[in-house]
Image 1 (cartoon, rainbow, N blue to C red):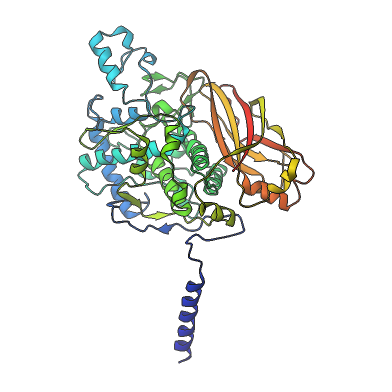
Image 2: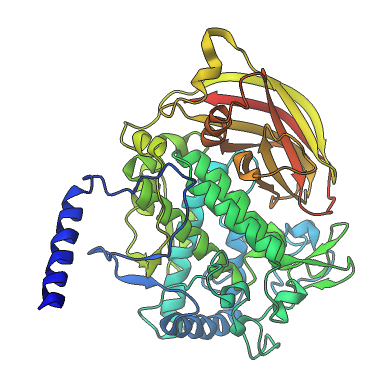
Length: 524
């Protein structure tokens, strides 16, 4: 009887507790938001397909369908829109002039200057749809939408060729630290080590990953930190910028690894043109040719959708944002038919109404500041609080840029006001192929060592860019509201009239010269 009575009391308590929860579905926390265990997805009426964890039983089944399809599309000619070469080239491919000899993977696609006019015209037609990934300077706002639609149409190709009408790209959640299995590349991509029998295998990857060894602990922690920091954002433009840097760019570079310069690269049809050779995933013109690309980007897309579900409709990209930089959206469906999205409105409608979901999402705890912001109409004007033009080179040593802050009108106290957001804008310039990863800190007391660095950590810069023959500038965004507010609470901002932005290298890589050109602080 006592057990029945106790159960009844607990049930009543649960009901009362439920009624006391605020109507807003987003959890609130005054602490640093933690990522809880993934939540199961709620399947909408239009969600016909489900993308699954690659380590689940159903995820493994989809992986086998991908393997079957890749074997078939590798056998198709490179001018066929559903061929392996064509699909990879949509993301990126070396330009024809880079091939000094015959291209055995795509004989028609070679140095056009030595070909007849008819063949040159055919190559020109191909390039209308190839090399279209938005990784070059100035196209950043299109990063997430373009890749979402790229994956969506590739899925249709796999369904059509694999015989699995329910296929959806599985994802590899390498940020999951709850189980050791997520630290290793799925076995199907590693064994057997023969591309003829295993369409998922690629030799030009980080050797340790292909050998089944786990991701280095410091690298995985960096991926986790990058995702967690991106999840704190309330603006699409800032989230898009940060998630591209880490875990996206970091993981591309990590999987690609490095190789001797004279190592044969099948996509370049010869040695790498760079000072140091990199695997397929480490180079924009070759990344789409490594099958692990699709699982990597399914993870990035899942992180985006997790963030969107937590932050609500106000977090969605707008047609106005996409229209600021024109960019082509042209793909091919499972039958090889061209699908074009001709206006920003069409793109926005498409990316938020696709007929798939994920088997689970990350549950994000939203801070009061973020909660207040997402309940308001979309932001809003951005006021420049401070800016400084510099010429600071990123090297293998820490550097700090000091930006003077105005103290007029009690500006210092505004930094701690939750309803105000602060965005750090950093312009970096480079030429050629930049490399390297840098952690960005705000007002870090000591670049050599500091306790509780999370209070100062703004995010990560990692380069995965289209090589450029001329110097170009790319703008990176970081939401630093919580960092500044926490520093004010600790009274660390009371006597400092300046904003100190530090760049700490995470590896010893040195590519082309990269310079910090300008640092700005904006208030929402």
